Each structure stands twice: as C-alpha cells, then as structure tokens.
Image (tube, rainbow, N blue to C red; front, side):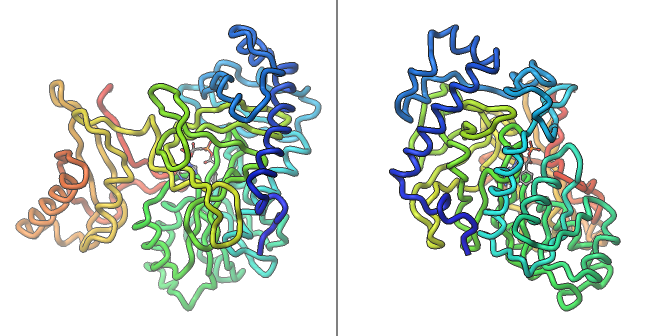
Length: 432
Ligand code: DLL
C-alpha cells in the first residue's frame, strides 16, 4: 500500500514543478521573516526573485549546525512563538542544544511524512507498534508516535529503557512492530534470549529503525534474532526529525519525501554540487516548514542519491544508507575510517557478539585505534592461543578492508556499555 500516492508517485516533471513553486515560496518567506537569512542574502546581493529555476538553489549559501547554535533558542524561527505548537531539541557541537519549532501545519506534514514510511515498510492499522525510542526533546519518540497514530496503528509508547519490562509488554500486548534504534533493539534481543523470549513467544514481524546507521550485516543479525523484516528510516532534528526518508519493504534505499525536503549532494571539502550516483554530503532544504525553514542545510551525512523508480512503484528519489558523517569520519594516519566499515568486518564472525567500541588515541604523533569486541563466551579469555588467533584474524580483516592497523582486544561478554538510545561506537581520546 502507498500512503500518499499523489506525493510518492509523482512524475519527475511534476515533482520538479511542485518543488520549484515551493522553493520560491520558502525562500521568500525565510528572507522576509528571518533576519539571519536576510543578512546572508544581502551580503552576496541575492534576492528571492533570483531563484527562477531549481538549479538556482546553488546560489543560496549553506546553513550549518553552528548557525542554529548561534541563534539559540528562537532567533531562526520564522513565525511568532504563539504559532509554535511544539519544540524539540538535539545535542549541538558544544554545551547548549539546538532548538527547533513546529507550527500546526508543520505537525500535520510531519505526521504525514512519517505515515508514508511506516506504510512503505509494511505497517497497517492491523498492527500494534511498540515505540522504544525515547520520548522527550529527541524527535524519535514523538515523531514516530504521531505517524503511527495517523496510520491507525495501536501505539505502545513504551519509550526507551527497562528491557525486561519492554519484553513483558511486547508479549502481553502482542506488539507486531518495534520502533527504535538498531543498537538498542539488538541489545533487547540479547535480553530476550536470556529471558527465554524466543520467536514463538512474541508476535513481532516488522522493525522500523533509525536515528543511527547500521550495516547490512547488523540488519541481517537483527532480522535473524527477532525473525522480523528490518527497515530503515532517516531524518534529523534540524530538518524535521524522522520522516525525511524511509525504506519500503524492498529494502533498497530510503525514499525521500521530496515534496517537503529538497535533496542535494555536495562535495564536502569544496561545497561543489554533485550529481545522482555520486557520493557526497547530503544537503537538505525544507520546502514547506513554517516554524523554522532550513535553506541548504549541511547534514554532514554521506550518501548517494538514486532517481530510479523503485519496484514498489514510488518514484521519489532514494538515498542510500548513510555511510558515515563527515564529522565522525576518523582519519587514522591519513586513512579515512568510518565506524560502519569496522562494524561490517565484525558482524557475523564466529565467537564474537555484535557489540564493539573503537578507542582512538595518539601515540606520539601517530593516531592509533583499538577495537574492543565482545566475546560470546567469556571462558575463551582463558584460552590464550585461541584468543590470540581470533584477535589476529580480526586485525587482519580490518587491515584488508580499511588499510589500517588496528589493535584488537577481545573482552568479556556484556562489558561494553549498552545504550538505551544511540550506541557510542567511538571514544576519541586524542585531544584529551
Ligand atoms: O536521529 C531523527 C530520527 C529519529 C531519525 C528516529 C530516524 C528515526 P537527530 O538526533 O537530530 O535526529 O540526529 C540526526 O542522526 O544527521 C544522522 O547522522 C543520524 N541518523 C539518523 N537516522 C539515521 C540513519 C534523529 N537511518 C542524525 N542512518 C543524522 C544513519 C542516521 N544515520
């Protein structure tokens, strides 16, 4: 089923016409109501009427997370606070969070966008969805919640944490969908196994995962352990929260809600625009947001856009899995390293579980990485030769895939800190 066929299956020409009309409106609205945008436009002599084609978007300066931080809390809002019905916030690069506000219309559009990705993944009003995202300033909990309700799904707003209770609710309420971060839902699978909550004892059939990335290997692990179809969705607070894009049940890229969010790919170091199929930083422009319009927001997320119509019939541009962020990319002795690359080496190997942590240090002038990996059986720590052999195998694999020499340390099961939200994969001690 397709939730909003008109928006999700629009022909390319019609979509571009709609985007252009909306782009012109939002640029005018931002220029007239947000001094930050007016100043930026005036500095380079740009006027809203100079935006005549979609390509003209490239004339508009980028917006960054620092801009949100510098205008904390409300200075980027385009409407009086009276019109704002919801605030959310997310962590900034330093101290204060960044704040976003939604009008009534924004809330309507947000729920519709989230409803689209839920239905695309296979959710329907027959389902019971347990939301294990945190409810609060984080957009995950409430964002998915309203989309689920819009579809008519029975929502269990369990919020994050208390795994044993989650499993009790899941069984007693008969949850069929689980909604959360992949790392937490994988942790929950471990607890379920310990508690004997095996496949026949719960009714889960579908997972909606987002808020952080996960590799195909990690997805396969989640699907196997829970016996579900795992789909992914993407978003960020600055743009709307969840609802920017989501996968359908074909699992071949996340359909972007292009009628609300205009996507571009740029070369991160130069800001140069790149085309479909090219890997670069995703830049998003909100086309309908009233509360806090974002023009050419640099997400720092690296991906590739694909304009081909999907087997599901949706024609909106899809984005590939996020490969990493331009700012969580580690540079180890000159080599770019994404945590997701290390993850794909680890997941599925014998004797080790799916939890890992990358510790980055500096030895002299040289960066060094150590990868902590949990064993499935702690007893192996006493069998030195086996342990050494496994550490060497992992080290060798990492070297082959990443061209980086990493130290590997196998550790006790469950000794790496579990997260109720997004997993902390990298501990960077270089500047400490
Ligand atoms: O994480 C919004 C969200 C909540 C999306 C729940 C989907 C589901 P923030 O906390 O502002 O918002 O974090 C945004 O998280 O720029 C990405 O780096 C990362 N991220 C979100 N979804 C994915 C994903 C929410 N599917 C930042 N894959 C983004 C990879 C993701 N990274």
